[in-house]
Length: 487
Image 1 (cartoon, rainbow, N blue to C red):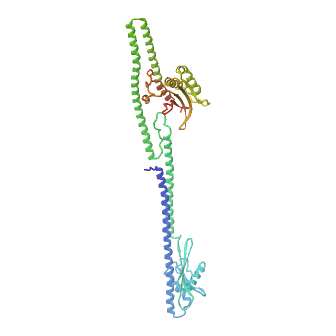
Image 2 (cartoon, rainbow, N blue to C red):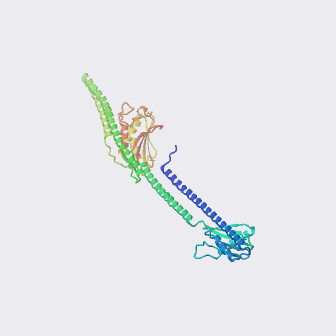
Image 3 (cartoon, helix red, strand yellow):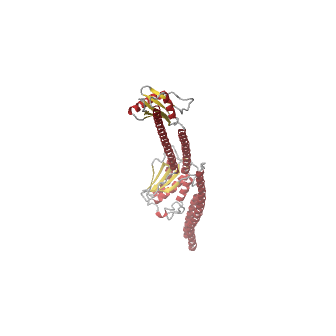
């Protein structure tokens, strides 16, 4: 099932809001256009009815006079007919003489209007000529930006030939209350929609910025000793509730981690005490047995051999205690720019005799970082770690084998790191001891104490680095992963 982010949903809502606004504006314009068409149609019906009213009154006048109708009476007849139709003007047109009567009884100006509108004279003349020619009513429509001009001509049948009645009205399409309401509706729609879109856009921008800051804070490396970074409040109530929950979860995680570390430390102390007791008990038992045998024999030669064996066991216990002190003592680092090539060369030179005795070759491969840019490390501590790794490699490499020392500068997630590798062509690490390889007293050699790799791990951790065994490598390879410079 596809999961959409809140940002995508809000953006979709913003698009839908704009689309609905456009559709609403289109519908409003459609309704207004329909209402305008209705207004024009109603005005056209009124103009036609007014023209027929003039025809009816002219016919009645013809029947009353029973002869020629004086033109002076035509104006009154037209005026009486048009009084029933507000906003419509008209008159009688003669094909020979032009306008012979005119009336606009509902004119809203000051005083009666008695002059034919000259701007529409040609249109009126054309409509009347066409009506006279076809002998039935003819309508004319001329739209403009704010109104539609409606003119209708109707032939008059009477004693005088060539007469037509005409009426004229105007339908205001972009004026009046309907147009005002339409503009007000569009204005209100524009203000509300654009305001809502602007508010939603502003909210989206701010919300996206706050989310981006939270993502950056969560992606940043946490401070030392922290599993989760401490997030700053964003000012957005809903997001701040999540921030507070994450900060509280981080606090609980720190407390749980502290309890786990304390429990692990206590368990480690127990295992360490048991291992120390075991390691010391064996030499003590051997020394006791040698001493009892020397006392029982009573010969100086047996006593000398027993004392030599006791001294050897004492040296073994002293070496064990010295390694324990190195493992448990606090390490204060003295960092300085270190020549890695010289460091590796010195380490190899210290073990040349042991390598020659076992017919093992020590090789320093690569440029060993001979550049001017040198890492900030504690050279003495790293030398001790390399000594332990190199000693383990020499002890596990068969005659004719090879041990390699390499160094390289690498970039890991944007941070510069120093990798020191010790590889050997020995049989590899016993799978049974791999899980606890860097724990104290874990060893694959009967004469080993199992503290060498544990000391290497403590030195790496003191540098805020790590030591690990490379899985799947063609040779047994340990790598010291150290920061190039302290963070």
